[in-house]
Length: 303
Image (cartoon, rainbow, N blue to C red):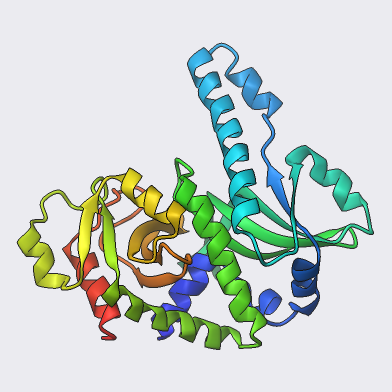
């Protein structure tokens, strides 16, 4: 349980001192005021840098348009914790922070600098390192201050539709648990019990992320529950439809050098299982191998 608690805390990046100790006002704002979802602006510096690279410039503009279109559609469809959803561009946020009467929850996808302890000591102190990571961040603006409640990190690279959906569903799943009045450890204990759901789910494995050397016999030896090896499009469709029959593996960064393999329920975005190790790092490759599948099965079996 201790390992699961630490892993879930790392993945969700929820500060115990903020969320579970000083959350009453923030929760009230989130529940009673509209949620502001931040849209992306085209960055002038980026446009200038890509001005002589038409193909890359077109890709960048397409990414901004596609992200803004998707987040507007999905937030209005899936966010139910607040009475309404409204949208503001990044460039509008500084002015809102100057408005002392503005009180709203804020959701934003952005890059941030993560600082982590790497162990050891140098000249009598602890060694720290920093890295650029990307995440969906949920916070509250009140009295001219912006506080952070939670960050849901995503793997570097493409922002899939499923990333946005899992963010919206997963954050609300956590908020509902927190609203129940349970302590942080009680919430994590409840989430750890979710592993049992995997027994009745079909685990969708991305054909680009499964170890290509694994045979059906290899998988059956370590993973006795239903599974399918499918293209990414099948997983995206299951997540978008909220299909309760399935679960899928997501790769989520924990630190600058490692990524956890997390099994998500495609229906409500709940974390079912986490597994560390398996040789998966940011500098390695996105591979679900025999050891990971064995860990998934053990968690689902309660071992």
